[in-house]
Image (cartoon, rainbow, N blue to C red; front, side, top):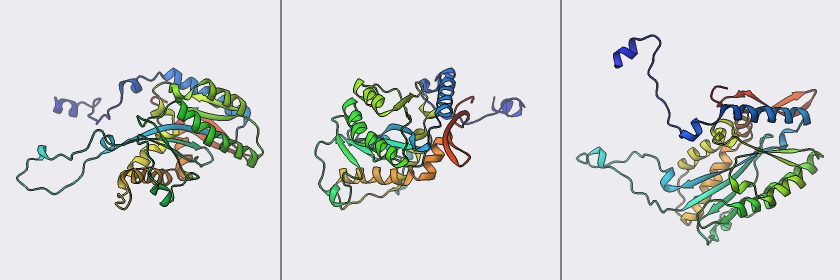
Length: 288
C-alpha cells in the first residue's frame, strides 16, 4: 500500500495534526458571517486600534503542561519503563488575559485554586498594580470572577484610554461564547461603557481568536523554559512563571501579529490609523 501511494501522482502521505472533533466541525458559514459583521462595523465606525480588544482564559496545570524530558538512566532500563511522576492533583491556575490591537495588553488576572496567597509574592514584586490574583476552589474562572475582572481591570483601562485619546465611540470586545462571559450585569456594563461584544463562532477560537493564534502558545513555550526559583514557595513560583511568560509573549509586535493572524489589522489612511478586519487575511481559517 505504501509503495502504491508513493507512486501515484495524485496521492501523497502527510502528517495530520490531531484536532478536537468539535473544532474541526466549526461551521464555515458562521465564521464568514462573523468576519462580515466585524468588517462592516469597523469600516462604518472607524474604530481606532486601541479600542479593539480580545479577552480569553488560558489554563495551567503541571500534569497537563508537562513535556517529555531528556534524562540519564542506567542502560539496562527499557525505554518504555522510563516515566516522570507528576501529581494529577497538582495546583491549577487560570489566566484571564486581554490584548488590544494597538499592541498593548491589560493587567492580567491569575486565578488560583489555593485560598491562601503567599506574602512573598509582594516581596518579590508581584504587587496588585501589576497582577490581580483571585481564588476559585476549582482554579477555573466563573461569572463572579469575570465580572470582577471587567469592573476592576477592563472598564477602568477603557476609561483611561478614552480620556487619553479623546475618543467616545464604540469599543469592540472579541470574546468566546462561554456562559460566564454573558451575565446581565456584564452586558449592562458594556451598554453603559459603549462596548460591543463580538462573540466568536462556537469552537472556532483556533481559527479566529488572536490570543489563541499568537500569544497563548508562545507563552506556554516560554513558561516551560523558565527555571524554577527554589528560594520562593511553589505557588509564588507558579504565578511568577505565568506572569513573566505573558510579559515575554505579549510584546507589542507579537500582539499586533496575533491580531493580523486573525485577520484584524491596522489600516493607515491620510495619517489616520483605523482597525479593519477581513477573512481573506485570516491565516488560520480553514478554507479561508
